[in-house]
Image (cartoon, rainbow, N blue to C red):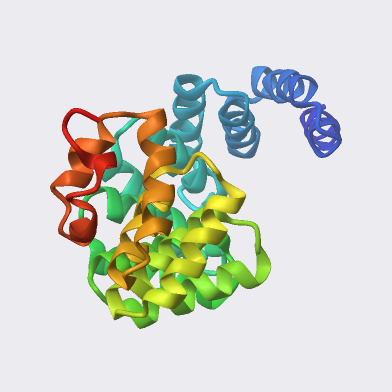
Length: 262
């Protein structure tokens, strides 16, 4: 009977009906509380439906019964991360990777947690591992590129954002971040082109438009810079104060747009 419940639960889960699947796994556990796979599957389904504390209890119980359940370690890691228990989540993903280091998401999730904990070298290593398994993993490319950008490794950052944009050419943040990297390299023409693309795909992305104004100002394109800033200041007058103090906008500091009484 337990095996029948397990088979039926799997079929319901595969069809997307998690409620029916969970009911059947619970029936299997009523007959055999030590059925670790049923408990792990129930916990993973509870995770998918947002019942985090119930999910964690079942996943941890399943792992006490059978520590080799790699999917349960994955589930534990996700739940613990969402609950803010980052060090425990880190341990869970490390255990999953030790058991089966063939899934890019395990490295990605652990890298993300390392990043939140400020261990950027470890995060870079894990994102690189994730990308070795899945070269076009969008979030891994974005996060690794941002770490490179933060560290001033602009050429490496550009390479990641270029790979990302080759597969998602309408990603405004990728254009914005690549624009920052080009700015860091002093390639203002390419930076301006990327900030423009970012603004086209996300017109309300304030940082992209502001940086576009800064690049125009540094290039000496005074009127183009004013046009970008005017759009921003009309939406948020507080930007005027920031712009008046920004050395990248030095050629505009005497412009009426930035006057204190404007």
